[in-house]
Every structure is written in structure tokens, then in C-alpha cells.
View 1: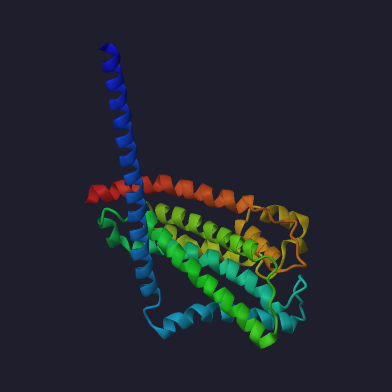
View 2: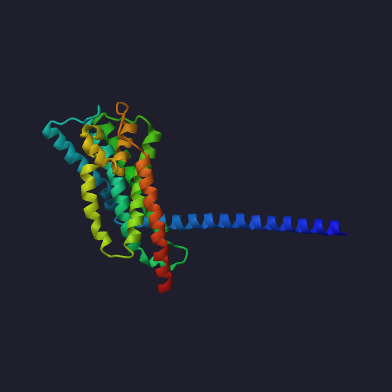
Length: 285
């Protein structure tokens, strides 16, 4: 009798555990589907907003980087300067410019997106990070489109095209994008507690424009300068992009762990600020 009772109890516990496991799996899949639905909707919305001017909207995303590249190429020619890598001027400048633009635009737009899409947070399933991530994804697709169009244009017009390691190239673009995402997320969450934070962006971005390797490689710099710039994650990413793009270039400066720790450190700090910011939204509701 007692053996039968014990056996029945074991079977009931096993059945209960099985039900709990199935419920857990159902909840996981439901969460994944909700995440995909939210981000698909947000991505389509942000793409429509970004290119709402039709042809001009699409054209404008090429105008700024191409203007920068053409201007700096002319400066190189007028000064008689050659790229420090065995490649053409356009390829050298494009890898640096688009790498930096990927960081800058992701950073800036993530910060502004939290403020400009404030009305979305009153829908319970849309969080701050959802808006930030969708904004960053759309920007990554945009900058990658610009990069490959410029490279193909350089091939057609000047006959120059060089990609040494495509996989490594894309990974380093993804890395500089993650740095922009982490910095943008942290800054956007910090801005929820102080309206002065967004006004600090130009102060951060202007020095980075000149010290992130857009017009030089790290090996050209004195050792003292390299020691200081070692903590610039964007410079590491651009060095990695060029190392992957050009077969004749190997950077001794490049350390992928610097941008990785930088990106995920800021992301973790952003998460802590996000929890406090979401509580304030809940209280307002």
C-alpha cells in the first residue's frame, strides 16, 4: 500500500515538473515572438521616418559621407600626402570615415530616439531599450549600404577595390556599432535624469573625430600618443576594419577587447539606469 502511494506521488511530481517545463518553454517562445514583433514594427516605423522624404531621404544618407571623403581626398592630393597603407586614398578614407560614422550616428540617434519616441513607452510592451536597439539596427543597415555603394563606385570609377577578410571586416563594423549602441544607450538613460546630457554630445564627438584614425593609422603616432589613445575604442575598431580590408596592413595597436569591454560596460550601466527610468514612467502612468 505504502509503496503504491509513494509511486503515485513520484508520478504526480514528474507530471507536474513536465507541465512546468512545457509552460516555461511556451513562455520563452512567447517572449521571443513578442520581442520579434515589437522590433519588426519599430524597425519598419524608423525606416519610414528616416526616409520619409522619398528620394531625397535616400540620397541624403550618401551625401554626408561622400562629401567628407571627397573633401579629405582633395586635401590629401593638395598636400601631396599618400595613405600610410599600400592602398588608394578613397579606400583608405572610406574605411575610416564609415567606421566613425557608424559609431557617431548610432550614438547620436540612440540618444535622440529615446526622447523623440517618448509616446511609445505608454504601451506596456515597448521599453527604452527596444527603441534604442531598433534605432541602432536601422542605422547599421544604412551605414553598411553606404559603405558598399562607395566601394563599388570606387571600383567602377577608379578601378580600385580591396577586401582582404570579409568576415573579419563585418565583425569589426559590428564591434564599432556595438560601441555606439552601448554609449548611446547609457547616455540616453543618463539623459532621463538630466536634460543637460544631450548638449554634451558635441563635446564628446568632436575630439573623437580627430583622434580615431580617420586620416592616420595608430602606428604613425609617437608611443606616448598611442599609450593615451589606447583607451579610445573607436580607434581600435577602425584599426581592425583596415586590417581586415587591406592585405598589406597588420595593426600592432589593435586590441578588440578594449571596445568589447567598453561596449558591454556601458550597456550594463545603462541597464541599471534604465530600471530607475522605467520606474518613473510607471509612476507617471
